[in-house]
Length: 426
Image (cartoon, rainbow, N blue to C red; front, top):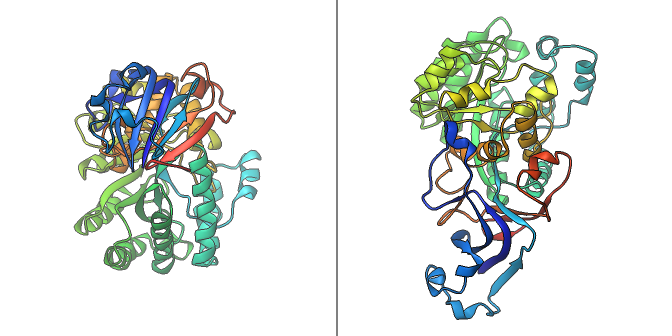
């Protein structure tokens, strides 16, 4: 099927030559086309340009029809007069496979308890682990698909989903099997990450090395045998897993073809960034504590620094020095961290707003940070994250808005009219 979106007020983030990621000062640049068209066939973007070019036969050469077929019934046309088209969000860090919710801990936070205090008394990740173990795989899938559908309605078309609320071989595998089912039944691009080292289970407190041994000797081989994970992750931070633990787990995962991604430096200068770079991690995420040594480690690496504004906002944490990282020439990605304890939202438009309000990023920078750079952090920037010929037709059409700057500005408004994933209107 051919889908033509015409009379687009502004087509945003177009690429004549696709790039893998955008870094430093270039993050403030955003290529756009006014009064544009976007031409899609089947799952892919085949062409784009100004409306004046639409009748040129060369525009249609990459499709199965000719310019004189504009009125053909086989072509679906969307008139986007007054509306804008942007690449759909890629959310490179989520924990959306979970059971129930944790609003009672939210009350504890309001009363002044810290993230670490709640975790120390059995709350936090351990609370979610207990709920997950008691929930059937089918019910876990049902709850998770509701979150997936919600995210699609808000413009997200690609998501990385982590395990980590199981913390036993059986429950971690259950989570990863649910992620596999989501991949098979959702139009989204789904990446799966094994995060058995998300926390130390209560029964292993004081015996942390034994739990690391369990992750390495039992969990990783079983995950690999069922081909359930693209990546391997570790929560390398104060009160969780050490650099030495992380080193061992990453090496074990890499032997089975899982590329590292790291939870790092959310609670302190943990060394997580450096160990991530050492093992060519696709991304290091959270990054509330980043200094000169961490920036130096990231410079020249293939690792995407990924900030999670929703978690910092919800927990009232220290803010990552995003401007300092960009001024040093680094790329930055922004993801939602959608999870029940520290960021119960997958609204990437709101993540853009937080990027502008709290981190002083420009609208252009937050658009790049939530699309092409998060696509890179998922390993999919060759097929998603921008408007480029040959990429998946993953886009959203806004409502009638005055400018793309209005998207992060109107932080509480639903401004999305239509979501298209792989060429199909959702």
